[in-house]
Amino acid sequence: MTVILLAIFAVTLIYLGVANRLSSYISVLAVQGVILFGVAFIELIEINWVNLVFILLETIVFKTIAIPYFLKYIIERNKITRDSEPFLPDFISIVIVTAIIIASFLLSNAIEDPHLGKIFFVASLSALFTGLYIIVTRRKIITHVMGFLVIENGVFVLSLAVGNEMPMLVNIGILLDIFASVFLLGIFANKIGDIMKEQDVEQLSNLKD
Image (cartoon, rainbow, N blue to C red; front, side, top):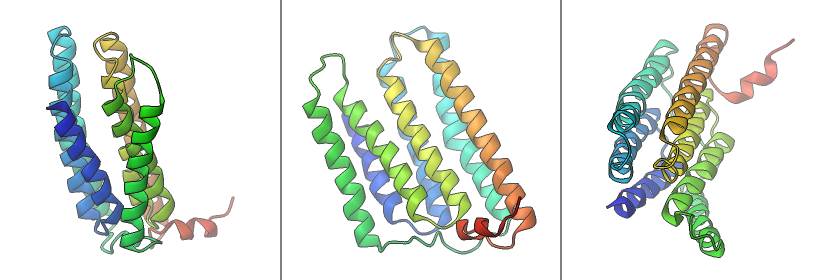
């Protein structure tokens, strides 16, 4: 079941590579939160129930509900109505994201480590580079925030591979990471919206010291 969920997670990465509407990004991030909730429930069922509940609430509350709602609030507050405006055509994006997933799979097979959960490694590495790809190829600052959150989801997937051995360390690290990234990036996006009419990264070149 974990393999199926992480395969669906990889499909959402391909969809993110070609999505143009900001609402689509928010929806996919919410779907990824549900997927990570299922993976966490399956993989960490043997740990202490307090830690398990903490991780499950972390995924379903923060990743599935709070973060998408917060991003929607930023979009509505700054009146961002246009699409994400990628630099590359959709077909090229599909090819690149698919190549990222295939390369991650090949890399995981090349690593001979019995302790390495290959499916987790593939999903996490794919999310990492897909998030970086979104950041590089999208114009809007808010889309860069979403790309960073995709990277966060990749880190979360990788942490699930060691969750049974270090549950509380994973809990604290992930929660603080999510809180700091969303809080700081949210403030950044709101402040930019207060002083700039456009939300494109190209407008940052106009800022002076």
